[in-house]
Amino acid sequence: MKKMQWIFGVSAALLASSCLMPGAAYAQGKPEVIIGYEDNGADPYMVSMAEHLFEKHMNADVQYKLFSSGPAAMSALASNSLTFMCGLGVPPLVTAIAQGLPMAIVYNQERYTNAAGIVVKPDSGIHDVAGLKGKKIAIVAGSQASFELATFLAQAHVPYESVTQVNMAPPQMRTSWVTGAIDAAIVWDPVFSALRAAGGKAIKTDGDLPREASSYNVCIANADWAKAHPDLVTGFVTALDAGYQVTMKNRDQAIAEMAKATGVTVPVATSELAGYELFSGADQTTPKVMGIDAGVKTSATYQTLVNTAKVLNKIGRITSVPANFDANVAPQYSKSLAH
Image 1 (cartoon, rainbow, N blue to C red):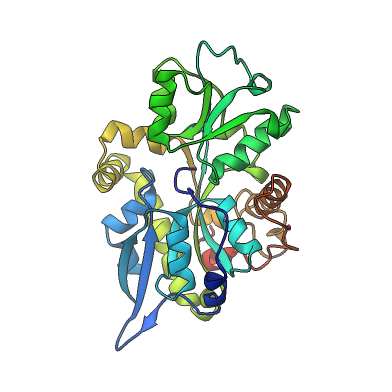
Image 2 (cartoon, helix red, strand yellow; image 1 turned 90 degrees about the vertical axis):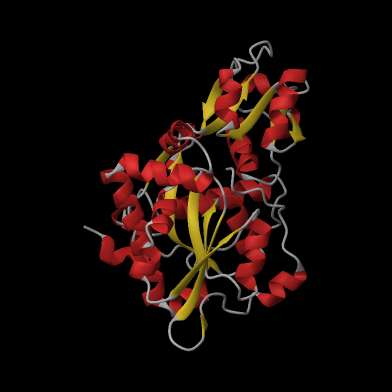
């Protein structure tokens, strides 16, 4: 969730600029490839960056750009100044697709499990999701949390409008927790763990979401640009898989690199990484991730796009559900990584 603090809306100017193909600006010699990312905790792609695996696997002049939010990244993608963006979540991506931006998932990085969820105060009287009715819950409005809260409430047959949502950034949640301004929070690490350490009880985690309507971190590119530059995209996903392999084979080294990149301690980075189900390059073409060929439509990633769109439409975040997401799930670039 943490990397998806998007305001759900794309300006007319942004839509107009989407006809541009973002990505490599070909100058003399190698093409320029700019990889965008957000500071969203420990992640294997940080190993790919630290060990220059993108440079190794892509015949390109690779540069990196840190973004503070999703809207800034999407603007850069649409204005021809960014090639790839990692660490994004499904709800803001679905919103962009619904508004006409031709974006495609080229690599599904991971699924949140126990690093995010709903935590309630010990004196709130809340023991389950049904108990949220009439209570105040802190939330980053427009983030993955909006989809998750709506999903959890629907599962418990609790009207979405019956819960008072208090929009605030995660750091503010700590103060509001202490002052009693909120009864619960739907948030991610490190605040999720901090509130539990302060006596809070987790009544739901992202791991409780079904695979076909789950919380994922994904890497995206302009779908049209990707089709025109398949070799660069294949190199990109190969580098991501290489970072995953280092993480699996030399976890201490990988976590140390992640901790350094994010400016946290090794124990914190270890905890953050433990909250994910990580996906390899070989996983990309399996049903639990993006599938391949005719299996794409029934894959967990594709179905999550569909189910997320339905929820966002129901709660008024998007005005209509896209007819399909056939151009928005692109496992073909990972075919060579399948075992």
